[in-house]
Image (cartoon, rainbow, N blue to C red; front, side, top):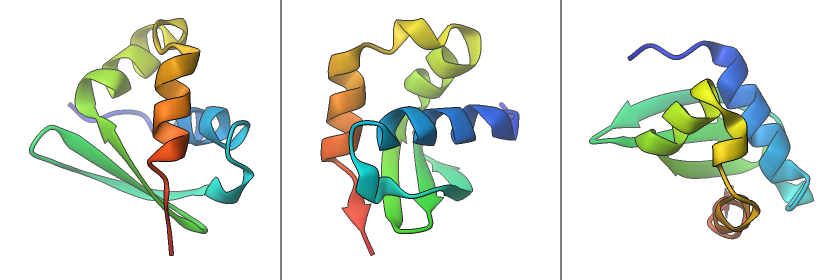
Length: 76
């Protein structure tokens, strides 16, 4: 599925509230069900099913899941 770019921006923003080092959205690629979101300061790996949740109903991504994404952030 081609996702509208706003869902990536929103997801990065939500994660950056937890981890300020995340930065801002630059681009994304999807490979084998994983979305790699490049930011101004690194990369976040997100399961494609979480992108679906972000697109359809962002409240379906729990605070624990956002914490997991923030903890998995890879700085440049």
